[in-house]
Image (spheres, rainbow, N blue to C red):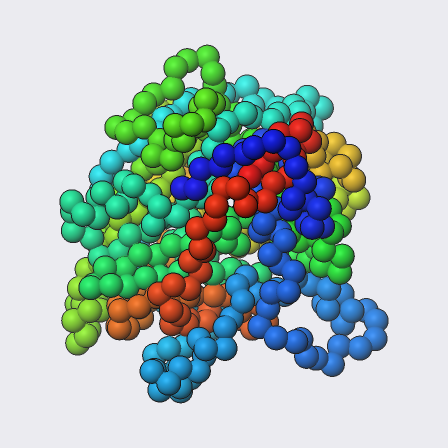
Length: 483
């Protein structure tokens, strides 16, 4: 969607974007560089209104004041007060769900049915040499040249997926979505930062999707830590959004570097549906597994919608195979080497302590990763540990270790309850199915532990078509012009 036709060299957005200098990270296609730069720039001036509070003085109050509390999307006043919907809060146009409530719902995971519908892309074997990497024999994370986003990196919306559109027309489904969106819902009760997804409902069909350049495209770092990264200086390399951009880049490169090139990749039923014919470089390696997932209904409910099974079409992802099993590949990253525990000094001898710290500080990210892996029935989970070579250089990293887990065992280790995860999905779907046709925004309130659900206009978040001649440009570090 939206092919770039760059002409000549120029500065454009880079002149006006205070984030652009450090955002030209290796391993990003031109389209991704533009998306990320625009995403970072968009954080200026977002929010719901002026912050209020009493926090005065030093100590904890001052530290908490610097936490990242931006809304992921600007909330419009007309979304809250609509004459058409009665203008009463909770009267159908706006409702809120306490995250604590989501932690109590349940749908037995054993009752959920999975069925493969179609595969697309390709699969390579995992390179087992990375299992032997240690702190002393660390490997530099390399830039991987691909024409498009890696599986698991920058996600194409469900609306722009030609295979989802095709399958929805050919077969019967109630809901179409991606594992990225479902995993965010499944892990919602662990989230701290704001994020959002968009739900469209028409004639009984529901599309759960993300906005272009949505927050859930990007990973977070230490979101759940007692001392989160400070947002006092947004241009700092260790500010929350900067760290999220760095983590996303690391995972994109890592997911490709650990693949074996010794043998030919296995082609799936279809080619990668997002291949750009105008790009000479190959797409990043990975497979999309389109699945029918059936959520059973509550047979004891008097509500026919709650009693009815829900059929979902879900685009899930598989990074590679290893030992004949499907695997998901992710990487945690260390940015502050002065913090304890220090990976280079303690990763080999105190792996358990480091894992416990990372699982606690990145609970939402880990739950999203595990949720996505389970949706795609990835039996194996490869977790990399990647650290900056120098504390002040967010562009050069070393792979220090790769740990292998059974995805089910990892889910248990981080306290991810699959029954609760599916209970959350069913709970939200039942709410949406009971609403009239329309477009809805589900957003995590960054100030309070709630999900807010708004009914928004059909054209909300739609961007006007831009003329190629007017597209802003900026140069990457190698002089290439990104549109």
